[in-house]
Length: 266
Image (cartoon, rainbow, N blue to C red):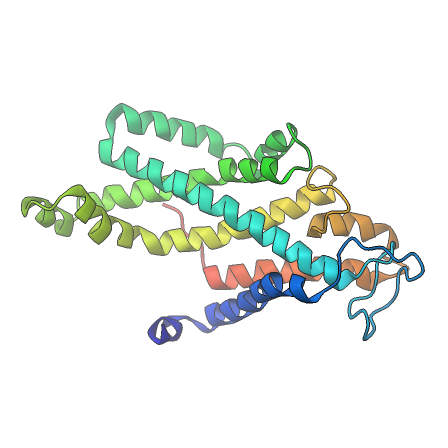
């Protein structure tokens, strides 16, 4: 663990620290704050104070409570979607690279077709069947993101299969499970981790964008995009309110970008 930390650049260390703080806030924060949908119409648009560190919104709801729950919701949906996309994409990429032929051709054609569609459009199409539902957004994000894992895993596995190490292992009689565990997955892991960081970033950004235009999760659900569109009419009267979700979203993007480093695609 120490060796891994020392191998990171300053930018990646900064990203790791920032992301850790954000994730801890998302995990532990909901235990410490009040109900994010509880209203107090006698305390609307309050500025930050000791009692309400981020103030209250137009319905008297705690901005801190809503922001913390929004972080938890965004990360839960993003991580679940990215993990599902990674499992599907890597499995299909392994199948295509290992079997080749018509299977590889069909899977590659499907992946190419899906990749031509913007992520937001794909998620929007799925959310149209059940607008504002967690599971429709999850399925849409997973479907939109699996293609990158397929392309990367297919290219990496095909290159590894013709390497000298794998050829030697085959000549020595090692089975496919050994090759997968010993050679294929270790070669694939670093680029998949980077892809997952960028995937989480894309998923959170897509979720916020859909919420902002009113086709994502619905109010009063505490979600960054929903909070932005709800608070936008009050940006002149209480600018600190809309600043909270905007800055939070920016910090998440910054942390994931720093930790992920440069994204390289085959």
